[in-house]
Amino acid sequence: MGSDTTSITYTENLQKFLRLSQNGSIIAEYIWVDADGGVRSKSRTLPEKAEGYTPNDLPIWNFDGSSTGQAPNGDSDVYLKPVAIFPDPFRGNPNILILSECWNADGTPNKFNHRHECAKLMAAHAETEPWFGLEQEYTLLDLNDRPYGWPKNGFPAAQGPYYCGVGAGKVVQRDIVEAHYKCCMFAGVKISGTNAEVMPAQWEFQVGPCEGIEMGDHLWLARFLLHRVAEEFGAKVSFDPKPIPGEWNGAGLHSNFSTKDMRDEGGMKAIEAAIKKLEGRHAEHIAVYGEGNEKRLTGRHETGAIDSFTYGVANRGASIRIPRECAAKGCGYFEDRRPASNADPYQITGIMMETCFGAVSE
Image 1 (tube, rainbow, N blue to C red):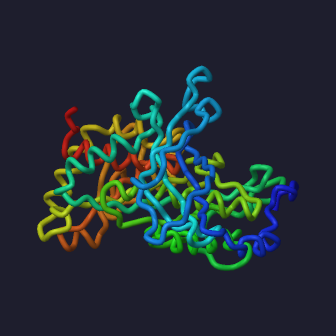
Image 2: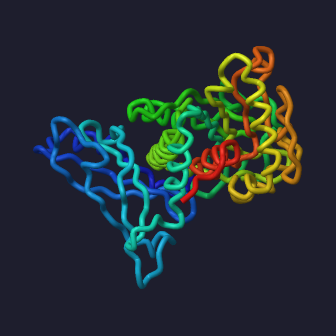
């Protein structure tokens, strides 16, 4: 743990209070994405409903956007429009987590609301049945911003034993990873796996397959849950694409994509057509694939170079990787390895649909 242990939650003391009756009320935690790609949340009390809530049943709320970088001080109200509901693993049933979009007072989406445009693209091209699976890499830091398990005045042994590692000296903070996994399952997030990554103190979880807008919703909720779990262990979560310079792997958000045509027999033709379109808009994709991605996409450490577009079968040094199994079957999916770990999943999945199937006319 970091030196400042006063910020660590005493969860065992909290349990007796969590068991108290709520007398017919529920706690609803409104969650949103801020100007820096972080998550914010606040709570309100609502009457319990036997049939539960839908997003349309929930009240629209607001927050001070000048304190989150989302609005000027003179016109600071930003509205929270509920879009997805999940069970709350921290407070337990019947309490809920509410993922919300941010809207301005004039009825326009806030400039940091990337979900709105993504949802329009998904709806317009719903007949393609787009499936996504995102692989979220992250690094666990102590309260002094040092990766867990790293010597205070040096570096650990070179990469090699840490990827999918088991045992002391190879992995750290597995308790956070396990707690996050169970929270995702309780909340109904479509988490599909997790593993230790190549750099020590680096981990990954995967979400998917999800169809359409569900991908962004589930990944953002999984990020919220990870921050919330790590908070209780006194740890920080970093989505920096290159948290440690030098001979260490960066952190990505590898994005797997397929449509019905790609998954059906002979789908390799559709996969190759999509990759050709991606090649023509490489710069546009890089522009929304995360801040600081140039530090990661160097052509080394299992990445392609940021200024070139490449693809290949089973090639982890390419921009786009076609899994060997898919190449052998002649159908399946492909993996876009360019997005950084801090990229917005709504922007990733949205531009994928726009590039492959066209923009949505107003």
